[in-house]
Amino acid sequence: MRGHSRISRGFTLIELLVVIAIIGILSAVVLASLNTARTKGNDAGVKANLNTVGTQAALFLSDNDGYGTFDNGIGAPDTCPVIDASGTSVFHNSTVEKAIAAALVDSSGGVTACLSTDTAYAAAVSRPDSTNSTYWCIDSSGAHCGVNSLTLTGAACSCTTSQ
Image (tube, rainbow, N blue to C red):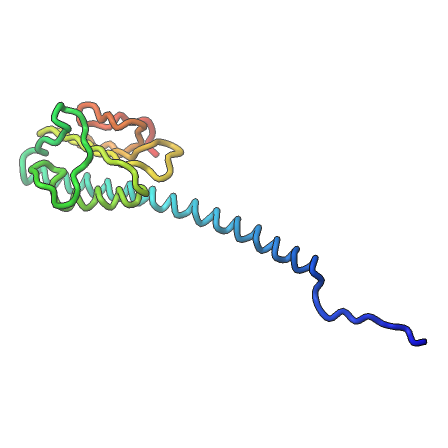
C-alpha cells in the first residue's frame, strides 16, 4: 500500500475565525478613537463659534452704544434666539444668531442660554464633551470658560474651569 500524504490546500475554520476576531477587535479600537476625536472637534467648534459671538458683540456695542436687553421677561437667561428672530439685542444680530446656531449644531443638540442688559451680555452653549464642564460660556467681560449652570448671574459667566 501506498502512504497517503495529506496536502493542506487552505485555511482551517479555526484559523479563519481567529483572523476575523482580530479584525473585529482592531475595528472597535479604531472606531472608538474616531468617536473621541469627533467629540473633541465638536467641542472646539462650540468654543470657536462662541468666540465669534464675542467678536461680533464688540462690534455691535461700538455701533449701538449698548447690547440691548434680552432675557426671559423676569431678568433671567432665556434660550438664545433662532436665526432671523426679531429683536434689537446683540443676540438678534444675524452674525451672532448664526454663530450660536452653529455652536448648537456642534454641541450635538444641546441647549443655549443668553442674557443681556444694555451694559453686559453672556451666552452659554452645551458642550458635547462635558468632562470638564457642562457648558461653554462667553461674556462681555472677556471671560471664555466652562460652567456647570446656565444661571449667567448679572449677564456674566460664573467660571468654574477654563477648559
